[in-house]
Length: 226
Image 1 (cartoon, helix red, strand yellow):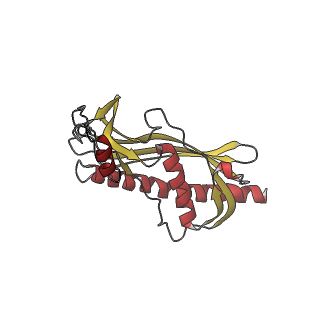
Image 2 (cartoon, helix red, strand yellow; image 1 turned 90 degrees about the vertical axis):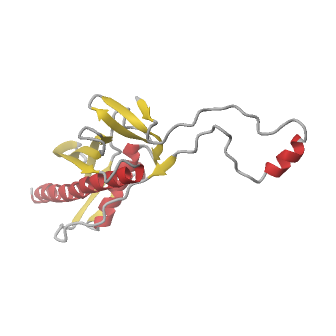
């Protein structure tokens, strides 16, 4: 796996002394309240976050059951805070000094939960660690979460989610679906690429909420009448 250092050019590392021995105490006193970048030191990484979905179909039915969302599983290349990119189908790289605010699967799980909450169509939704007694559990896999340069110099943000709806307490998989979205960035800069990720993930989250509530409600109603 490589770093894409050409996005933010690296600075050559140089070893220089900040203070000379003579008058060291005085110099330290002057610098004590200052934050200075050591010559040759790279700037700190930038951190980016994405947003949950907040708009849904007005006719989306309200449900009375409870839902748990497990954190998505992901391969090692995506289970990281680093922002992945692919210029070749078989090779994963990363943007230099650019990170998500959390590991990608955990960030996506949080945005899933917030999107369900924003729908205001479900009684309760949360993480398994909260001890919620759920009627359904969503198990998911984050299969794609990278910028792709396959079609030219301007990338697409590619988000791919596979989800399984599990009925409790039997832990029976009752439905599954995949959501796969590619959204073009406006240009090859990190802010534009992150906005493309936000659009691609937002489309996937909206479809996930609709599918889960409608599918779960149908199954829940069938169980209640049987």
